[in-house]
Length: 472
Image 1: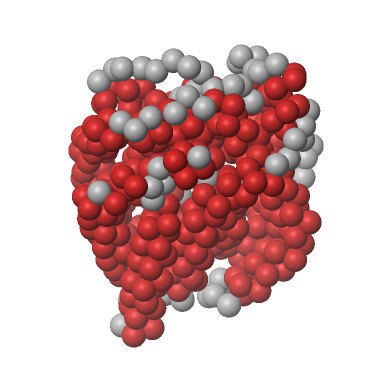
Image 2 (image 1 turned 120 degrees about the vertical axis):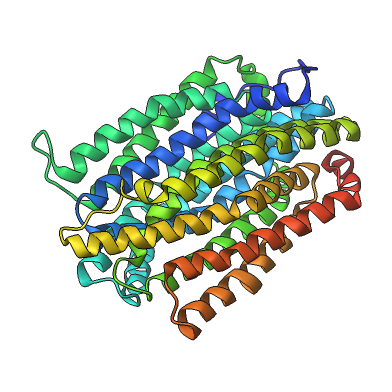
């Protein structure tokens, strides 16, 4: 781990003074490209698996949701370096910022090894979980195989995330973007070969998609390590000094990241149970649900990219004590995200059925038509979310960047477990509703969360949460 740590470049000293929207967009567009590439990975997996049939798509879709849930805790903890690095860069304490990046790298390796060792047991749990839905036997087997394989290849994804998060915290968003762009065609190629069987390779079906993505993630890790090494890396003495494990700094990264890890994990577990509930509403419901998730990413991930970029600027501003600049950055994010998500809502409302048709394929015309009809309702429900999601995403990222991460954690957890999950259970078991009804009641969590986050920002409590002052 110490040798690999040499790839992390040191924080730069340049501060930009561009207008807020321009600076947000300068940082955001590479993050947006990376997010789009991540979405396309999911598109590739599910679109190729969808060609195998709705049973395969339903099983792999449920497993994909569980995969994300299993990765959200380490992913959230690793993102704990973001406000730390950004605020220390803003405070001109670059050596400390670099050290936090090194310790996040250590955490990523440890988390990846833990998931690798636990993969067989996790695969068995996934099979049992899928068996409790209306999935046919083949779909249950697909779910277990897909999930186990993704866990076996989690390490390169997590380490790449740690390095990429550090680079983005410095404002170097283009390097991770370049890696994502280079890896995407690799992912397409290996999935095509392994799912359908080409060049003499046996057709592995859905498991081939998970394996192909794992191989592509490994190549991505090698690329980002190689490119970062050439991007102004620090000298050997400084690397060795920073690479030595300091429990106090490791604890600092964990303490800030733990709230994000717990929040993302518990929200994702709630989402898994909602997906499980959807599995009780009909044979094609999980396939429709998975298609809707992939399509919604078209609006959510670019919005997250802009909010992510804004969080870098907000963190730096808080680190140097310029709270007015933090407010300007938040306004700039809102001015970009809100009209974009409104436009995507119109697209989902008008063309949601056609977009879902990319994923949904069934040999029986009646089943195919029923799936498309359900998908149209799901996308109409997603259109309803968009403005609420714009505010929720913007203020959630802004508050976390200031160091107000505990409030963000509790709001996210309570909205998921006290609103979304109970309402979805009531709709499915109390009203005998379908997947569209589940998506409609999801709006309660989104709008409630956005209202609480806006109120918290306007209260000004975040102004007393600076991480640099606490560390000092």
